[in-house]
Length: 52
Length: 156
Image 1 (cartoon, each protein chain N blue to C red):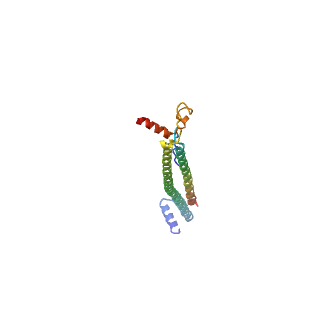
Image 2 (cartoon, rainbow over the protein chains, first blue to last red):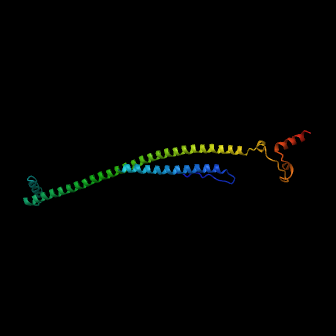
Image 3 (cartoon, chains in turn green, blue):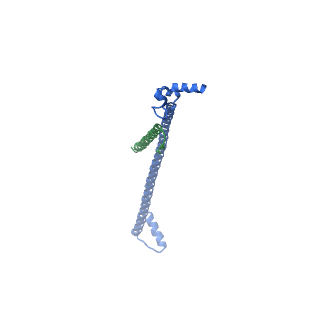
């Protein structure tokens, strides 16, 4: 669940390159959020199973 | 009881106390009742202590079970988190490699697009500083012709 490093954009950069890097970062951030949510659901399920 | 009463009467008569068999019997009965009550009290206390100990042991066992379950769940969660983060990292690396290849491709395309050679200028009209009306352009001269003329001049 660590934050993803945001690609820095500077004047004169190739926009296509920066777009690709930003898309990568966004994809990774989404995967981390989804992974964190699934992990938390797993923990909850384990405790629910143990309680029943 | 029947043995105890004459013994008590005899013992107390040694100290100068004379008791009727009824009183001696009452004393014996009292002693027996007090002993029984004391024993009962002790038994009740012992029973409570035993039950309390058992209850405490069960509570402790339950606490230990809960802690063990917590520990197991923690281990499982840690393993799950490691597995997930490894998968995400693997996918991110693949994405990064794809992006790096894309960037290289972009650079190559950019370089080839900007690498303008003389061939790219073939067929273009030469326009002198004075404008299109002046110079070679006015004569409708092409780059190749101008270059040929320039080479001829140098040869002379």
